[in-house]
Length: 175
Image 1 (cartoon, rainbow, N blue to C red):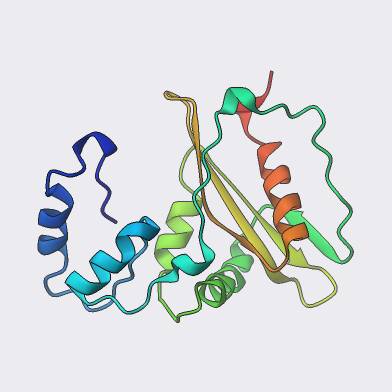
Image 2 (image 1 turned 180 degrees about the vertical axis):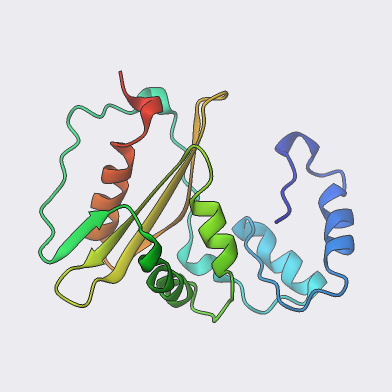
């Protein structure tokens, strides 16, 4: 994964890193700022770009009031922590949501289980506990920031409840 800090952007650092990174790696996927996707696709030959179902969202955490946060009842859907036996279904759901058969299982599992990460899944309890949503919120306590993703669900209602559920677990937001 390549990331250039915003204060260093526009200085061709990302281009230099991409030139080094792109040599000899055939199994790769582009996840970038949507406005940069076309540039990278053209320059480096990416043909699987999943941004059509991804959005960036930034919220100042001092503006979040958790007191009125209520979870809706989801018929047949349970939101919970992932256990070891859930990972194959999480990987399958991730590939389905990306719309391409991109193999990033190890990356997803490591990313979702790092320190200061809050990861929950929504499962269809009436259909073999199939995963119908995942949400990861990562906290940087030093700068009081929360980063989201991967975060997707089969329906907006599942997504809303999943996001609220994960927010309730973040120690940074608790009084």
